Amino acid sequence: MGEIRNVPFFNYPYVFTSNEEKFLSIIRDVGRRGAFILQKDLEEFENNIAKYVGAKYAVGVGNATDGLHLALRAAGIGPGDEVIFCSHTMVATASAIYFTGATPIPVECGRDHLIDHQSVEKAITSRTKAIMPTQLNGRTANMDELQSIADKNNLIIVEDAAQALGSKFKGRCAGTFGLAGVVSFYPAKTLGCLGDGGVVFTNDEKIYKKLRMLRDHGRDETGEVIIWGFNSRLDNIQAAILNYKLSFYEQEISRRREIAGLYQSLLGDVKEIGLPPAPNSDPEHFDIYQNYEIEAERRDELKEYLSKNGIGTIIQWGGKAVHQWEKLGFNVKLPFTEKMFQRCLLLPMNTSLTDDDVYYVANKIREFYGYGSK
Ligand SMILES: *Cc1c(COP(=O)(O)O)cnc(C)c1O
Image 1 (cartoon, rainbow, N blue to C red):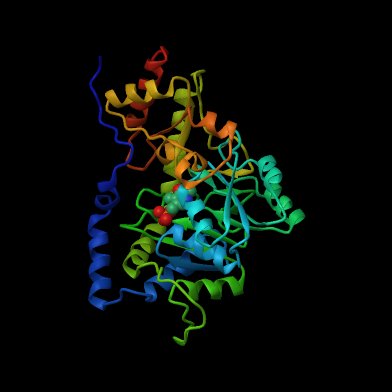
Image 2 (cartoon, protein in one colour):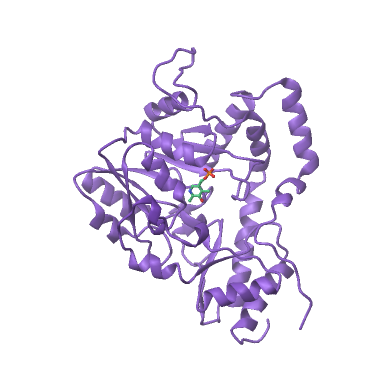
């Protein structure tokens, strides 16, 4: 028995301590200017992040859940409409649909854990108005296939790219495919701020203008109230912090891809588990590894074993796909997704991990299944 090493699933204090002095100076600067709401730091960040993903417009919002809700509203989704989403997602995806008055329609995930195109096609009815794919775990779905389904059926696409800032399909960034796309800055996300935050991307000027009003009480540039609106603005302090973090975001992604590569090389031969696609395994996909989601035989035992050895793991979404939360009133069986939920497990994946941490996690998994150490 070697020494037990503590590898938490996510290191929340590190979000702050990794750049503590810089953050404090940013907060001091914004605070002394009294620049809290809808100020230049937000505008600069919106410009920078739009440029980063290659979108025409970016609108900072209170969080990604609000962003999804407002994007659907801006697109005219409402009562009587149906919106298709993949059940392997955060409940936020579905609640954003629900609160427009539309009906959320869950469908299966595929083998890569992203929305399954065949299930989408089967779920389309005369009421379907939109498809909302989740670009899960930092991977972007095959958007060619999804777009062609949307085009054939006259549907819009709104992307839940909460987990996928900088992830690409065929060189194009998640969040820029549909009419609108949304990214989250929740602290544990790849670009996390010190609280809640989100952004909506769009290339459509009308949607852009509507989003800006929807997030700010329905007011236009002159302060005139044009529509019923909400209060969901990205705080200027958070924007200033995000602006700084965006300047080295590429390094963050590189490190995550490096860790994914390390897991792949250390666990690729373990037959009892299935790994996510390796970083350079498919030229069409550029994955940013928001999460590292494996499938495992005897998953619950493995989780327990890792926990006893100081390693934190998580079953995403509290262990259920959205349609499995019975009290929300879904009445559908999604056998592939349900089976997958008996096997899936998130391993630690974040930039506070050292290579030694990754070796330790991988070797404990090898040990559990009776493989020799690497
Ligand atoms: C985190 C997350 C959200 C919600 O983001 P918030 O900014 O916390 O509202 C929505 N969808 C997915 C897939 C997420 O991972």
